[in-house]
Image 1 (cartoon, rainbow, N blue to C red):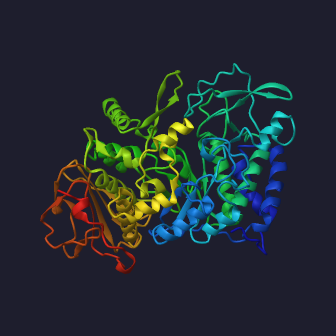
Image 2 (spheres, rainbow, N blue to C red; image 1 turned 30 degrees about the vertical axis):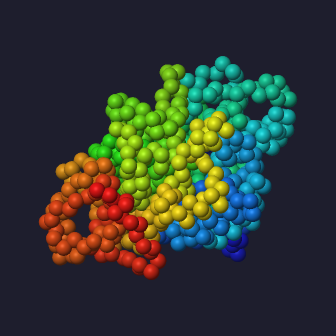
Length: 603
C-alpha cells in the first residue's frame, strides 16, 4: 500500500535520479515544467533510504492469471466470487493474483480502458479488489499505450478541450507508415470527426484503442498518477501492457525505441523511491533478443514475460522431441541480479508465434499451425512491412491444444498437459498459471462466436455452480488437473533449487524425446534434475548420463521413489516428469495425496 513518509528526499536528490533518464526524452524547457510536478506528486511517499529490494521473490512465489469474471455466480459479484474461489481452492497453492483489466472498458475484454481509476461496476468495486489483496499479492495492468475511444481524454480531444486535446497523435491520412511494426492488420490511422474537422489518429491495435502521445510530458505525468493510485489500492506488481509501442517516431519501426526504454526506467526509478518491494513487469510479445532488452542494465523491468516458452513447448509436445527447446534454453542468459523471468504457457491472449522466428523451419511451422487448426484453433494474422500477412498468434485453449500430437488426437491429453505445466514450473523464473490451465478449460467456441473475436476462445467465464460440480467429480478433467497441479505446485514451493534465480543448466541426454535440465539452489545445498518425457512412447534414461553425485541419496519428489543404483536404466512413461533431488524439502502435511499415477502415466 502507498504510505506517507515522515522524512522524504529533497527535490534536488529526486531530480538527480530522474533527470538523467528523461533528458534524452524531453527538452530542457519541458523538464523544467515536468520535474517539479513529478516531485509534488510523489514527495509525500518518497522513502529517504530506498535500497533495492533483492528479496521480492523466492521459490514460494506462484501467480494466477485471471479475469475478474472468469468465475461467476448469482449470489455475489464476480470479484467476490473470484475471492471465494481463491480462498476455497487455491489459498495454499498460489501466492499472487494477476487480475486482468478490471476497469470500465469498451472493447478487447478490458484492454480499451475508459477510466483507469474506477472498477467496472459489473465486476465489483475497489473494496472487492483490496479484499483479495489482503490474502494474495496483486498484479494490476497499466494499459500504458492507449485508451478507449470512449474515454474522457478522447472526448476532450474530439471537442478540442484540454487536457485531452493534446494527448493523441494526429497525422495526414497519406502519411507513409510502412515501417511501423505492429501486431494487427487493421488500418494504423483511424479517421475521427472533431470540433476542428476530420483528424486521423494513431491506433496501433484497433480503432477503439487510441494511442496516447508520450511526446507530451503531461501524458507521462498522467500515467505516473495512475501507477501511484494502483499502489495505493494494493498492487505489488505493475504489468506494463503493450509497452514496446509507447514512443512513436516516423520512419522507424515505432517499437522498442530508446525513448520507450527511458520512460520505463523512469517508472521503475519512481517506484523504487516510493516502495522498493513493488515489481515492474513488461509485456513485449516479440523475438527473444528484443524481449531481453527490457531488463536494461538492471534498471528497467524487474520481470519480463518468457514469451518464447509457450510456442516452443507446445511444438515440442506436438513433435515429441526437445531439440528446439534445448537450443532456446542454451541461448537464454540467467536473469540479472534483482530480475526474473515470468514463465507461463497460456494467458488471456493467444500463443504468440513471433518468438519462434529463426527456430522453427517452414515445414515444422506449417505443421504446428495445421495441427492447431485441426484441434479447433483460430490463427490471428499481422501485417508485415511489405504488405503481406503472417501468422501472429494461435488462439486456442491450451488444454485442447494438447489433446494430441502432429499425428492427431490421442488418449494422452491429461498426461501431456500435466507435463507441459511441470516443465514450466521447473524453469528458472516465477511461474504463472492461467486460470483456464488450472481448470483444464476446453475451447469456448460459443463465446468466440458471440463476440466475433478469436481470443474469446480462451476467455471462458465459468458458472461457479457448474465448476464446483466438476471439481467435486474425481473423474472429470477439471478435478484431475487441478488436484495434480495443486500437489505439484505445493511440492515445488518448498524446493530451494526452484528459486527464480537458482542455477539452471541444460542437459543433453542421448534420447531426443527427453528434455532435462539441472537446477541448483543459490546456497548450492540442493540439486534438482528436472527430467521430462515429451513423447507418447516409453523411453529409457541412463542415470549415468546425469552425473549424479554418488555420495548423496537421490529421490524423485513427484513419485517419492528412491534412486539407489546411480548406474541403472530408468524407464520414463509417456509424458512423465521426474524431479530428482539429493535434498528433498518436503512438508507432507500440506500436500494432498497424489493423483492416481496409474491413470496419469498409463503404459
